[in-house]
Length: 440
Length: 78
Image (tube, rainbow over all chains, first blue to last red; front, side):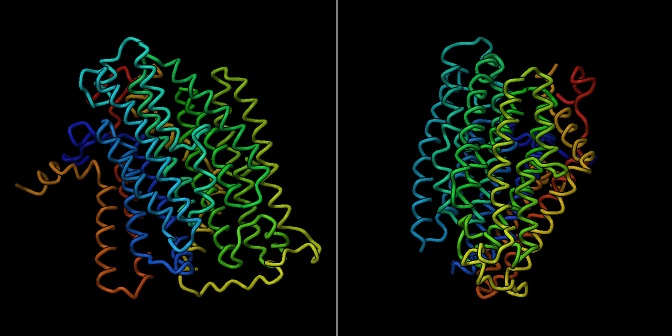
C-alpha cells in the first residue's frame, strides 16, 4: 500500500471506504454510459454538446462526493452540486417547451425539498451543540427525543425526493417525460444511487438512537413506492412515463433491502443497484435509438418492431424482462437476493408484497415485449411501417451501439456469473466500519 | 515540499476518482474552446475520463486495506 494513501480526507468530511467506492463506481459508470448514448440525441436535437458534457460531469462529481460525504456541510454542497446540474440538464433542450416545463418543475420541487432537508440538518446541528460531522452528531444524540424524530422526518423528506420515493415522487413522471432521454437515464440511475448512498450513511450513522422510528418511516415509503410505482406504470402510454413509474417501483425494492438493516440486506442493495444500472441504462439506450429512428416514445408505436429491427427488439426485451425479474437475467438474481435477505429477518409481509408487485411489473414490461413481436403486418404501427434501416456510420451512432451491447452483455451474464459481484458487494459491506457496528 | 506531501495535503488518494472527473471536465472545456467544430472528440474525452475514474475506483478498492477484523471487534485504524 502506498504510504500516502488516505481513506478519510478533508478533516473527516469525506470517507473513501469500500461502501462509498462501490457507490462511486456505479455513479461514474452511469455517467459513462449516459455520455455514450447522448451524442447522437443531442446532435439531432440541435443543441451544443460540450456544455452538456460539462454539466453531466459536474452532476457526476456531486453524486460521487455525496457517496462518501461524512459531514453535513459536505453533504449539502455535494447534494446541491448534483441537484443544480440535474436541473440544468433537464432543461437542456431549451427549444422544447416540455423540457422547459420539466426543468422548472424539477427546480421548484427540488428547491423545496432542499430547504426541508436543510431545516432537518439545522435541527441536528442545534441538538448536537454545533457539530456537523455525522459521527460526532450521533455521539451527541444518544437518547431518543421528539426533536430528533422531527429532524429525522425532515431529513427523510429531503432524501426521499432524490430517491423519488412515494409520496415525494410527484416530480418524477413529468420531469422524465419532458427532459432529454439521456438525462432521464442518468437521473434514474446516477442521481438515485447517490441518494441511496446518502440515505445509508446518514441514517445508519446519525440515528441509531431512533433506529425503530426511521425504519418505520422507510417501511411506509417502501410499501407506497412498490405499490404506486408498479400499479400506475400499467396505465402509461408513453415509454418514458412508464419507465418513470417503474423506477419508482424499483426504488421501493431497493429500499426494502435497506430497511432489512443486515449485512445481507446492504449487500443485496448494492448488487441490485449495480445490475439496475445496466438493465435500466440498456432499456433507455434502446428507447433513445427507437426515438432517433421514429421521433416518438409512445408504447403503441413499438407495434411490430420485431419485423423491422429484431436486434433492437431483442435488446429492449431482455432489458425489460430483467427489470421485471425474469430468470436467468441479472434482475432476477438481484430481486431474489433482496427478498432472501428480507425473509431472513422475518419481514414476510414486505417480501410477499414485493413478490406480488414484481408480478405486476412483469405484466407491464411483457406488454411492451408483446407489442413489439406482433406477427401480422396490419398490426404494425405507422412509424414502424416507415421505420428506416439504422445507419451505424452516422456520428454518435457507434457509441449508442457500444452502450447497448455492453449493457446487454452485463444484463444477460451478471446474474448467471454473479459470484465475483457478490464477493465485491459483501466485502464492501463487511469492510465498512459504520455498517459493521450496526450488525454487531 | 515533495510530491508525496503535496498529494497528501490535497487528499489526492482519497478523491482520486473525483479528481479525474474534474480534470476531464476542464479538458472538455478547453477542447471545446480550441476546436468548436469537432464534437466527436468531446464525447471520446468524456468517456475516457469517466473510464479513468472507474479504473481509479478499482485501484482504490485494491489498495484499501481491511481496517476491521473479527467482525468489527478489532479496529486497525481508528
